[in-house]
Picture 1: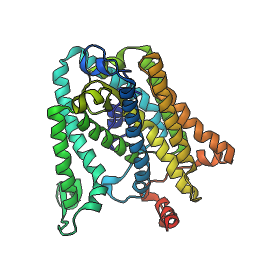
Picture 2: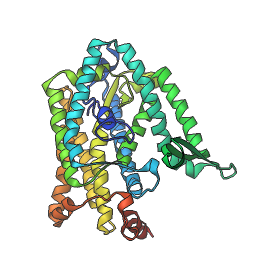
Picture 3: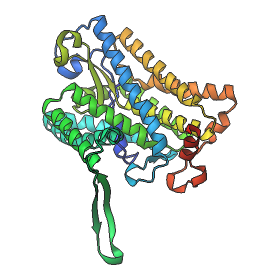
Picture 4: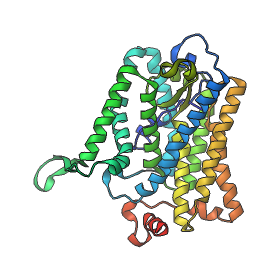
Length: 384
């Protein structure tokens, strides 16, 4: 488990690096990291509830984000087009993430922590509202009353005139999207004013689900490069220096999922948290989502590689919790998640004789797909 961060879809080497993997360390108790108070000794029941809840919250965005990534891969809507991470992006990612992390460390050393976190709160307020609104959109489409007219809107911002006119912003939305935006804004105001852990988790889950859905790896080799690169990054910054832990304790933003270990004693006002960074959800999650899309491309009406990697993630996360709880020391979760999430599917592919086919799989951007061979078309036929 680790303190990491993520964001909705953006340029893989820029915003994703800044938000996905800026922090990656876990506090075994959570008290010192969040409150700087005396150590809290959690009860066995409180510990089990906290870690069980974190595991469940980690699995939800991976599972549903992966399913939504299949539809996203064939989307023609510009606002839902995935960001594709190439091999070059994957090789640069750990370097950019390291620079971002060390830059944050210097910022917290030089400038006032209070003002930095105030700016970060405003920044993540905007990102969180947009991410949560996008996450709620499919559900809103199902429950929105048919008696209320669903009007269409378009936000268009152009530059120049005549033949030289160029679109800067062209965003289409409807009444349902506006309702989602209002609800998300209420959660955002709640988070900014109270920093409540439930509001933090709502934003964190939205960030994680959007990351898994909208950040796509172009092939399995790229996924291996990214995961093993961040494996080294995570281990170095957690075990080799105090940079990551220092930044993690200073950084106030919804870039982690938290759950109180004293919930049974103090209720919703509990304050001693166990934590899981979003980077430890999104980074393995986008690889698991890729394997689901690979399953779909095989046209065998099975999700063998998806389930194998999903179970591997559960195993890796459980092992992280066990080691952290046993040795009472911050753990880089990718140390356990990467070998599990890469190793399990590779073993399955070797057993099935599909290893070469798995590594040859190349994801095609939506605009380049032929209608008759689109991944989404084949999956819909199977469902029928």
